[in-house]
Length: 130
Image 1 (cartoon, rainbow, N blue to C red):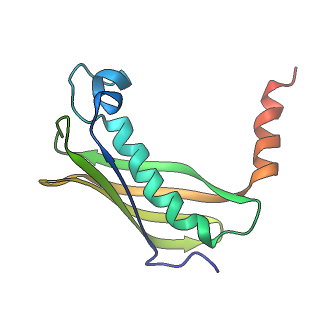
Image 2: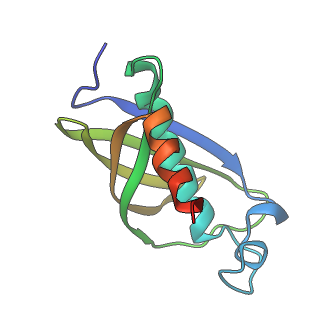
């Protein structure tokens, strides 16, 4: 199975003290934090792609160009949706959007690359060498 244009994903969460701007250090208010919205968008993307990959492969996020347009208070459900819009070899581009129970809260474009796990980890580990 390969990654194809149109492939969709979804991830959801509840806004709690653990994912607020105050907790993330991205602000001082108890509302859903932009870094956690980004993470939710990435989760929707990577989990939709993962079943299409070979054993020993993963994807890594390399670009995220989004807006966060509406604040979400504690206690509300939030979710992100992704859809593959382009596949260019190992590069995958997705449209991402996040919502709360009242509507759209953010949107944008996300890029991921298919990597070989062992090769990627070995390259990262080389940064620790003298």
